[in-house]
Amino acid sequence: MNNYETLWKYLSYSCTSTQTLTFADIYHIAKISVDSEFVRRKNEAERYGISVMKINMNNGTVLFARNGR
Image (cartoon, one colour):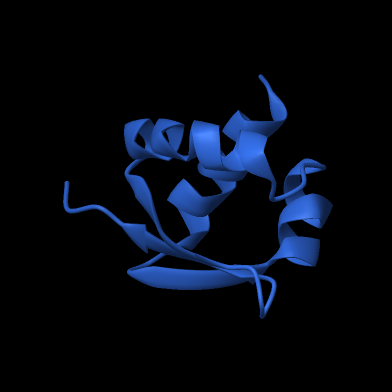
C-alpha cells in the first residue's frame, strides 16, 4: 500500500460527509506533503468514495467530501 492509499483509506473510514484536514494532519496520517504530486494523484481518492474538493494553500488545509455511493 502506498502512502496515498493510506490517506484515502483513512478518509473512507473517517469522513462522514465533509472533512477538512491541515497539511500537518495529512503528513501525520500518511507521511505525504500537499504538493504537485498530491494534486496529480487526488483523483485516486474517488476509488475510495472520496473527493478532494478544495486545496487552500493560504490556510494550509484540504477539504474532502464523501461521494454518494
